Length: 364
Ligand SMILES: Cc1ncc(COP(=O)(O)O)c(C=O)c1O
Image (cartoon, rainbow, N blue to C red; front, top):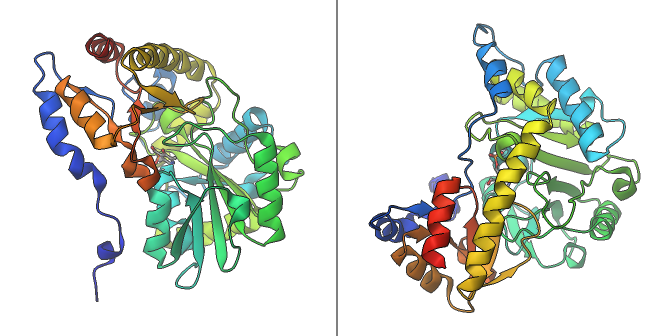
C-alpha cells in the first residue's frame, strides 16, 4: 500500500528553515512574522476556568457538556446574529485544523467526489480532500465552479493568507448557489473577530442564510480570538443533520475536547472584554508593520481583516523572504498558499510589541 502521506503536499515550512537560520543570526535576534501563532498570555479568567477543572477523572463527551453547548449556541446567536442555534446545531472540535483536515472523510467523501476551496488558501483544505481521496479543486469565484461531483465547498472569510473579507452579498449569492446545486457549504470563520477595516459577517446570519441553517456549516476557533491555540479549542455550528452525523462518527473516533478545556471555552465565550483587549494589541502591531512595509516599498493588498498583511514588492516571494531574512525578519512566502501567491509574502502580526518594534526599526 502506498503510504497515505504520499498523497499529501510536502510540508512547506521545511523550505523556510535556511531563511530562518539567516534571520536568527541577526545580532538583535530573530523577528518571526511567518506563523500566526498567538504570543500574548492566555487571559486570566480562562486560565482560572481551566485550573478549576483539573479534577476530571472521567471521560468527556464528544458533544461536550450541556453548559458548553449552551455557551456555543449563545455565542453564535449573540456574536454572529444567528437564530435558533440549538444544541443539535453545535459540536465542539479539537481545534479547527482537525475538523478541516478530517471533515471530508467524516462526511464519507472519497474518489469521484470534489472538494473546492479558494485559489489562495490555508493548505489544510487541500489536505482534507487528499486524505479522503477526493479531488481538490481551486476557485476564483465559487459560483463559477462546475458543480458536477462537487460535494464540499469551503469559504474562508476573513481569509488566510490575504485578509480578504467576503461581503454579505457575496456570501448570500454563494449560499444560494450551493443550495441550488446541493453542495455542502463550509465557512471557515476563525478570524471573524479580527476585522480592521470591515466587519466580517457569518454565513449563519439570517439575512445571509434566509434564517435556514440547512446545508451550512460555520467553523470557529478560539485560537486567535482568545489566545487559545495551545488549548485546541474550536467548534462547528450549522445544519443539525450534518452535525448529528459528524457527532456519531466522531464518537466512534474518540474525538473529544478534554474536560478542562471545555470549561475554559465556556469562560472564553462568555467574555468579550479579553477579545477587545487582544484586538487593540493586534491593531497597534498591524498599524506599525503596515507603515514600515509602506516605507520599504511594499504594496499591501486586501488585509482588511485577520492576523496578516498580504504584501508584495512585485518580485518573486522567495526574493522578498531572502532579503527580509538578512534583516532578521522572517515572513511566509505567498506560494505556501498556492502558486497564485508567488509574488506576495504573508506578514503575521502575532509577535510581541518588542519584536514588532524591532522589525519596524529594521524595515524603516
Ligand atoms: C483559515 C484557518 N483555518 C483554521 C485554522 C486552524 O486553527 P486552529 O486549529 O488553531 O483552530 C487556521 C490556523 O491558522 C487558519 O488560518
